[in-house]
Length: 297
Image (cartoon, rainbow, N blue to C red; front, side, top):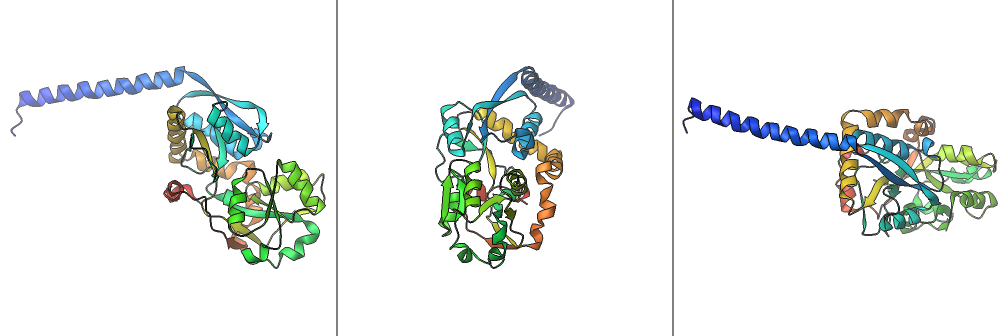
């Protein structure tokens, strides 16, 4: 088709009108987002100090990068992971960081970017110090079968260990788990590599004879915390997903990941120098399988 000068001017005018309209919509949305201050309630998971929690720091960062104005508010009561899932369903909290469970309510949905790049799936064992020699001979899942793991009630890792043939004892809170280890009622506590050292440091004041296994770790593929929201809260889901993606794009997520105090012990643990005992992960959904590899370590 022959484009005359008159047609070209007419086309340019219509294009400019379209562009200005779209720009106006974007600016209007930005003004609304910046002008609105929304309170978001998150789960107080067993009363953990949020300032020391990498997951809390990621939540702050993601909301900042989403472009809105938000105020984070902790739930009024402490809760287990199971309780947090129930509170999300009832709408009493807006968001929580949780692992994938085999009993995830259909009313909640995840933001498909792992919080710790999968480091939570690298499980380091907390043991009694005088049992250290016993664990030097562990080379496979079958070697662990005579021993009992201690885990929190509702922790998804319980399902993973049990499905791989390992005996597990679950109790209501982390304090009880360490008491059971000290008393000999369980043999080990498998904690994420990003949290194990901080828990040991915290509890050694009460139970001196606890330590970390230094020879191996349990490798659970694509296991991590994710942010969860109610499936009907589409706006918050979109904001968290967009903010998370933005934090990766501008490098602020990786800066936080590498500089957060909770991750300082990772160098000391030297996972690359240990033998990895690979587990099957029955909780790896199709959605998690399809998460881009750039979000995993």
